[in-house]
Length: 130
View 1 (cartoon, rainbow, N blue to C red):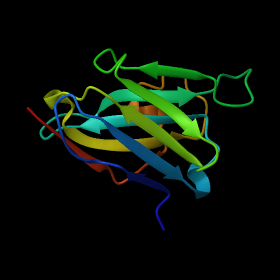
View 2 (cartoon, rainbow, N blue to C red; view 1 turned 120 degrees about the vertical axis):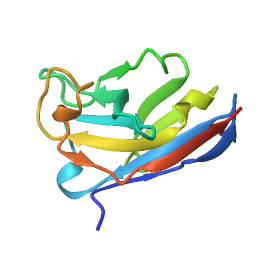
View 3 (tube, rainbow, N blue to C red; view 1 turned 180 degrees about the vertical axis):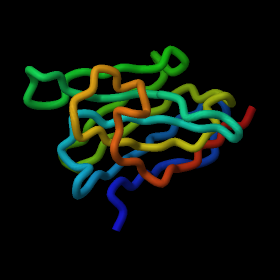
View 4 (tube, helix red, strand yellow; view 1 turned 45 degrees about the vertical axis):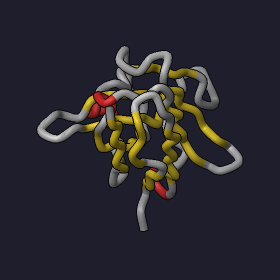
């Protein structure tokens, strides 16, 4: 049984859109933060987006984005479906990568850091043609 399951990847033309979803369960559920990272071949994992809560909030109330996707990608939580989604608009060829959902089950002061996350999904492929 998968703890984090990503879906929604695919092949699109530049300028197109995709919506990725992450379904957490078990230990990955009700976390401090849910993040999206991506990794291209021969590259390190890089931060994409995160939705998180601070120590004074009862639920997720903050978001952060990599500069490369700011204004194009939106991270959100869908309470009805129980998922964390990443809406990706105006996709570019440089967005091509495997996208991973990650869950942080404890507080961290920098959710851009891969070390903040205890659980990772299997990844979903996104390819953007020119």
